[in-house]
Length: 445
Image: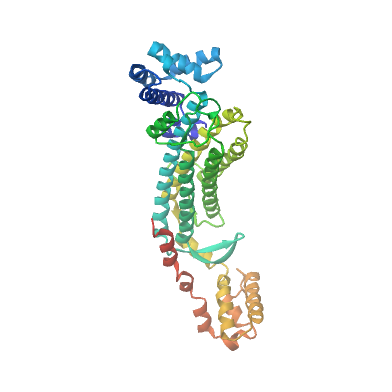
């Protein structure tokens, strides 16, 4: 991911320096477990830890380049790392990596990185949920028009809109937490995963120290269905981000103007048109969501590896694991800030709600007419005719409100008078159960 969309805390997880430090920790823990089992001398494990830990901690750009220089000769990254570590540890380094294969280190390291990344993303979601909850309660009873197919439907509240997104991101958080648990697995099982040269107790020891579970059957790699589920969980969260961003983009349109991104002092909307206030943050989020989702298909294709292993997945994961988590981390942070500062215009919402002359109350009138004695077919025809008459003359001198057109419809006035119509079209009826919905959404929050 390019620096523009990268936050330091997430980037640090995927840095080569941190990757090498995790590799050392895996090797040191494995050596300590082997020493306890008598596979290697206890003194060797002690020296590996005492000399290796400060060497690993000191890894910076120069040390990464030194390891890379060795890899350019060995053509093998783990061997290059072990060679570089041995230069600082000394003869006892020969007891590192006993009975292990490269995937034991690489896959366990990836599990550590992905779980750490998931923890940051879950914290990001918690911050977003807090912002959505605050704004939802702020606008719990702010009337606005609900739209289906982009067309005015019936009244809702802006708070209910936000409550819906809160519920959706709550589900996304649960999926991500489940994906984190699934990916948090350790494999120290040796070539083709049979433990022929390494005791299963070594794997259990390393897993426990790293906060991971053991992989029941690792062949030579951790099965990639776990990883696919992880990236799918990220993609669903990204789609939820895009859905909310798309809502903001629509509400900010000049013809709608119900809400907009906060416009900072000194901010410029266009290089040529000084009047512009564009939804640049939500458009940016839409693009980032596309990127995060694009990693799902490669992750799914990584599941089908040859026999006990191949490395066709490796190059893919070196790209998608950092990029997907870094991109989603940035997007969640940006969305949280956008929602915290979102400018809401209740007056404009009220104007839009009544801009069609009252036709948005058509269903309530339809129900009232049927309850007053009209057949549903006759009531539907009368209400639709009144609505269409209101539509056609909107803004014209001869135009009449939906209420007036209803009273002019044959049959309506015989069963309902103006007072009864007003009662049927009372906006308060639309919001009678808002608190019930909020209790459902936020009861456990």
